[in-house]
Image (tube, rainbow, N blue to C red):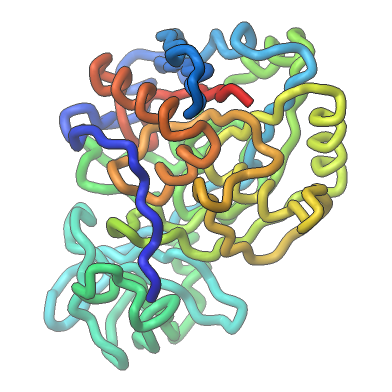
Length: 361
């Protein structure tokens, strides 16, 4: 397997900066999380990037009339369940995605808090997940999926029963050991999510409130939607994102094209939105309606063509999501933003703080 390009942004692992729970549990409104705004900073002989430290509710003042925000309308489903693997005993299972042939992609992780992937499972092994029997068919998406050669964390799995129904009955939101406790599924939903399918929250859209959406509209800033149902985000270093289901409607494609034609900026609310929009761009650079499965990997070598700016959370070093951020914002602006975020104590992960990256074009 060819090595995946790695991001150039370097910073210390921010373990002490992880958000332990939703901002509401810390006494903050959703739109009161911090927002670092980074402008300029292209990789040519331009001025130093401009960095500002604001609150997310100040977003409308940082954009221009005629700009377009594109959000993900996928809702989060309960995709974590307890399991049993004979050689390990109790485990945590993340149901990463349902495949077209009726099988599921499962990620096996250590109990009780899913802190580490289990990498020594093997083909044909039986396990229990949500009280259903299952058989590991083959590594996903292929046997050499682990860039480190240390084993496979994702498995195409045959389930003896209806895993979707079992998850509805007894599943819980996917969570990891850095949270201070378990939180209900409602805490993993965004204002825009009305199409269930994401196994992890499209978290860039979480800080939006109805009050903020009204303020955005009052500033002459448009909002359009795409759908991308996210898989698990716990990629190993050097591991690319998995294929995901998406849809870009004809109406959204027209809004994006009109915004660019009229001189406005298309600002993606999240890496998921960026992936969906860029998966709908044809070879001639035009965007149109599209859907199905996307395996598009956006990198500085294959950069976005319709996304001009990005709202995002903060990603771990060498993560594939960080590579996408560099592709949108440029290496210099991304590095400046992360340096300022670490120095300023911004909070990481799905319940953390935000960034608005507006590179010079």
